[in-house]
Image (cartoon, rainbow, N blue to C red; front, top):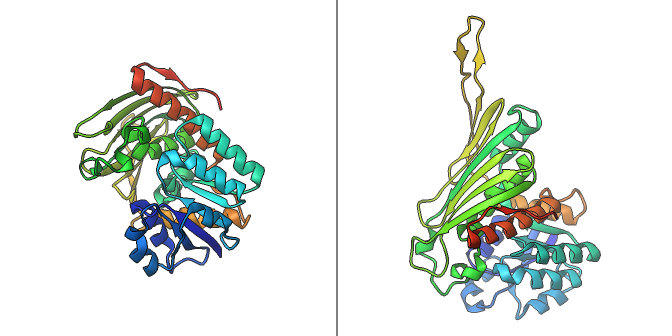
Length: 337
């Protein structure tokens, strides 16, 4: 059993703890740290998490195997470096940091310390994504032509203006940092490196940062991509891959519906025939528990964490280009990693 500490006990930190509380034989949260302990006392008591007085106290604890960082994005680099120096395995919520240079520093530190570094891109673990991956690997979709993704929530109107999530320095590309990162991760996995991007942001609610982002991407392999993400409308998720042999679409906020539509064929009489769609339902899956279980397995050296660090670093190179494009309005080339 991997004994972990949760750092950051806001909504997402609590969700991570709750995903494995009392139902995992792989990882257990035994300690926690937050800047506002009074708000977390009841939750921690109910879930068997002992609150520490400081992050350093957690890092000094010889009984802690790993730290899970659910903290503001700008804190990730320093916290991950401190954990690596203390020889603690590291799980960090996405994005790993807010630029490629700092992400490289974290990756190098973890590598030199010999500790596992995992990034919380939880949607890779969903059965709908796994089934799409299997079809892609089997050649069922052919060559990727294009990808279209939308990921939206309605959180802009509910996040207090003094909350860190409302700060523009924590969301330099508008809604992309909050939700669009997941769509980009899927596109990188299924189409490879991004060559260039164009980013447009907008603000629809009074606030400190933009809440809506649209991205156009060109991939080195020839495919194109479009990502629309917003925290200013109804909650929705859809991800579609268009291939030369068919398309695959994941939809619904919980990713529970997967549809395959094969490309049309020509019957002997010359009539064009559209084969029937295949539809699968994968409801009720806990992606947070799945990613933490995979992290625990990587810590035990059973098998590597299934989100490659090379994909994470390329994603950060794309992130840098997106931020630059959001500022300038220009098409920006993605740097090599």
